[in-house]
Length: 428
Ligand code: HEC
Ligand code: HEC
Image (cartoon, rainbow, N blue to C red; front, side, top):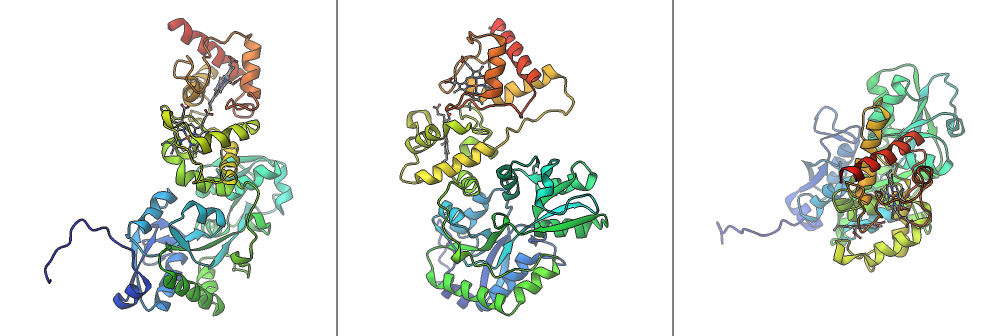
């Protein structure tokens, strides 16, 4: 029926057979994420170059579709919506795969590692030297969680690039960054006084592969075969080398044992896929949805119960049956590690800081006037002394959603918050 227009039909990702017949495969990639991918034909990025080679192995040409990867969840929706057939540059860990049950993942085409970027002769030669002064990291990246685990001081930034800028300007002594990003920044900045130290720790190595819709086993097998060939003949290593990426070693993700302990990196992925749309980016909350940043350690059991049972009547869906107990604990490990993000001018006076902290942090649970919500008690009705108030704020209440804020802001800010709450109750 030539000329028949089919409307309203959802687009479908291609099967291997359809890719071969049409000699075309659509690849999603970020237009501005060098050295991984870029819209610039002169430097397309190594993920794009590797995908062209993979496409050729499938008997097709790669057509690129540019999508932002700021939110992994939104980017990957392009696969389920049939906007593209393959998506390179994704972690192939059990945690990531579990967060996206409709997607399949290839074997790894390379292992992404980390490097310390620091000044030549600055006294940093390896990870142990990071214990002395804060290291710049991207907030909640594997590097951030790694430093959190070692207890070494860290200073968090929104992006890899901002963390690099911190070490470049001398704001921090070192930065712990993804090796490909660091190599790219150093090369582009053309700075001779910065050096990169490779970190061998297996906790800081992440395997990367290609995602596609799980439905087509033939496509999965063909992509794996293409990767095996391109790794064996050195094509992947050569491509990565052109972008200054340290060469891939032989570690295979398939031989990695499944993680049985709560894993904050898996938790981050699960959070982004399932919780972020309500609890906000970085768990900062908003409206009637509580902030989950810096969730206190003692509250794990209660957290897991709330997640699995939900509070349906109050807008918190139950996740039992969708998430396992271990996955809920992994999300807990992630939100526990989140440092509350408080946006304010660096040298704001202390009572202005107190007002900002109250509005941005305390109000999500205690209410905008501090009058209490279903989640947390009224602060206006607080009966203890000022010292008890400050002590509660700094030390938190173990086993409840009240986190310890020592280390997030200074005691004098906590004292001013007490005054601020007192003012609020006078006004009302
Ligand atoms: C559809 C929106 C929505 C989604 C999705 C959602 N939540 Fe919630 N969540 C809420 C709301 C609303 C509340 C507050 C319920 C109340 O008032 O008791 C809440 C409360 C919570 C609480 C209790 C906070 C406290 O201490 O009182 C936890 C813990 C929690 N959510 C975790 C999660 C996790 C983890 C996920 C993802 C697996 C998730 N939520 C997904 C809306 C959501
Ligand atoms: C994630 C939700 C949450 C956030 C954010 C939060 N609190 Fe709480 N807070 C609670 C809960 C829940 C309790 C009750 C704990 C308990 O059962 O003892 C509490 C208790 C308190 C108490 C003791 C109240 C009493 O009557 O014993 C004080 C004081 C307090 N919070 C101050 C603050 C301040 C100040 C901030 C902001 C820096 C803050 N809280 C942020 C949830 C929160």
